[in-house]
Amino acid sequence: MGAHNSYSLQKAPVLMSVTDLSTDFLLESAPPAHALVNVSFTLREGEVLGLVGESGCGKTTLMLSLMRLLPANGRITSGTVNFMGQDLLDLSENAMAGIRWKHIAMIFQGAMNALNPVQRVGDQIAEAIVQHNYIEDKGVIDGRVAELLDLVGIGPERRHQYPHQYSGGMRQRAMIAMALACSPQIVIADEPTTALDVMVQAQILELLDKLRQKLGLSILFVTHDLGVVAEMCDTVLVMYGGVTAEYASVDTIYNDPQHPYTRELLRAFPDLSRPTEKLASIPGHPPRLNALPPGCRFAPRCPAVFDRCHTEQPGLRQVSPGHWASCHLAENGD
Image (cartoon, rainbow, N blue to C red):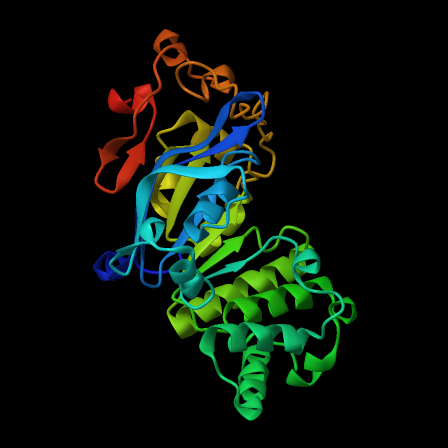
């Protein structure tokens, strides 16, 4: 499993290091929603980090916090996002705008909504190049657009078409081309295959993996599909209710999960080697972030719950080298 050898990855330089990142959403006439609490991780050069959890677990909030693109009622309350030696949270909006797309780009969920329907696809890619690289030579820009479309498997002659003339998979490829327009070091992919059929999904994942190898990209991959994680990722951050449930290499997560939530997610995923086994589903749903249960956020749904879980939120503890979990059972070595 895992995209490539974890040993070579350990030697790769750290590109981004996130420490204790917390984000609130201010709500009218209600306490703030604690959407992220003390989330930490590192991203190395060439690493694919999978961010996993059900909808409402804080994955997209984490992405938007890193990019500083939160909606007006979102507030980063603490933490650091160290990228190439500077804390992105300390930068002025102007300086941050220079980081977005050029160094950290994002592939948004739902390509049809992210592309401008009345502008030709090639022009939209060109706009990203012009805005961030200050290139004005039309020949250079056209050459780069053709190169990017070719890189993602779209015939450069289709640059003059509009998004509605593309299939869903092609629109997603165009979004990837746009994200790569300025040769970023990090690409954040927010569920990039959600609306696509299975065959096209596989093609897009293969494309991302090829681009990672060819361009040395680091990818933050947001998904709720554990099959994709097994295929694509080196490390996995499992989120629940805005906190880190578990964080480890992909092999560790699949073979030795320590958090009951990770185990339940894995049980809810089909195992091709055991086709007759019934799939589990996790009863209930993630907590509302402005009405969190006391104690562990997963306690109301946890099959291994005991008294302490209802009163005390477990901290994130290192279970073994490179493996963290926030569960009272994990600290007992169970």
